[in-house]
Length: 68
Image (tube, rainbow, N blue to C red; front, side, top):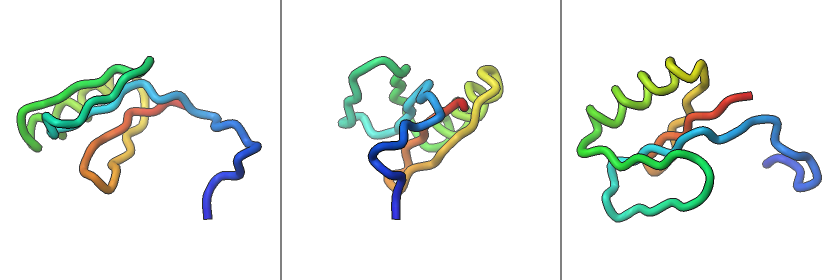
């Protein structure tokens, strides 16, 4: 069903992007709140391209930028 708890992930979360103003994330990765879905998609793509990283869209319509 999921990754085994004893196996460390082989990726880094570089950024978390959302259009939900009520969502707050703390910690090491960059966190950005954008004004709408269009800006969210464009910024996510631009940032991932600049960082040479991959994008994961979450079920809550937020995005993670990760790098292996």
